Image (cartoon, rainbow, N blue to C red; front, side, top):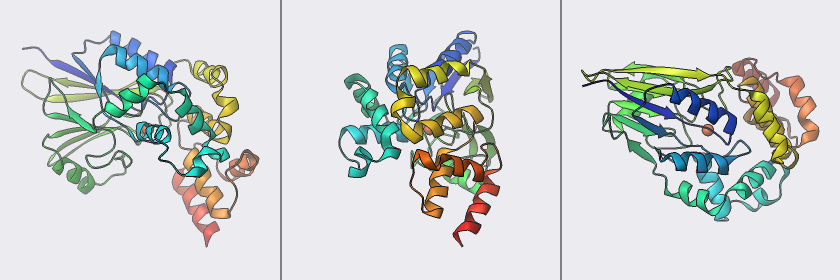
Amino acid sequence: MTALRIAVLADIHGNVPALEAVLADLADQTVDEVLVGGDLVGRGPEGRAVVHRIAALGWRGVRGNHEDYLLAFHRREVPDRWWHAPEWAASRFMAADLDGFSLGYAADLPFSLASELAPHLRLVHGTPTSNHEGLGPWSSDGELSASLAAVAEPLLACAHTHRSFERDVAAGRVVNVGSVGLPFNRDPRAQYGLFTVDPRGETTVELRRVPYDRDEIFTRYQSTGFAAQGGITATLLRLELEHAVPVLVPFQRWAEAIGRPLEAGELDAFLEFYQPGESLRGFFERLGALEV
Ligand SMILES: [Fe+2]
């Protein structure tokens, strides 16, 4: 019996150039199964194209919170404000980009699944109980153990926080495969996980990082109309891509803390307060001081 290799890619976020770089990297590997960890769409310009590409490859996957958000848009299950507020312009663009096929595909994705070839591997988007909460390098051993206790398998693959890590605890192993299209670990390369199960059943994990031409995704921000129509949110997402750190949520927290609107005119003041790439802890400490 030879070793089995299972690739897990997640959080592509409408970034076709990053996805294509990962597909090219996968073509150089001997991979027996590929699983997709959700968030094919959202936070990027070409969700529909990503869904069609993955669907054509026939890979199984799970539903991320961004599939849920855009499905909610189409089902009109979102607050009225989302239909007209400037900060929701990017979401309106991304929802309008999806066609019937991609909406049906997203709706049919399961919340979690087990590998067919390595049944000791369970994939979820965030945690076994939520696709909008996630595990990061900061998560305690107790949190990882609680997640493992919620599933039958001893190997849990996850994503959502856009920060890869691998850690063993008594109950098993948790691997966050990171993000293909929008990493937050200060490394802008497209990231995914490659699991190798040797003939004895031992699993090793390689967290791969694939360089790609980021000018191409910035070009697509323009050519698709996302940059022009996506408002302040598209601008903040572009900064996230450039720096491979969160910018959108820090902007929202800053604006909320000082009572400013979530609008483009606030961007310069925000970027005086927060330099993308600085420590988020320092940012939140300064923000906390403002709120007192
Ligand atoms: Fe995500």
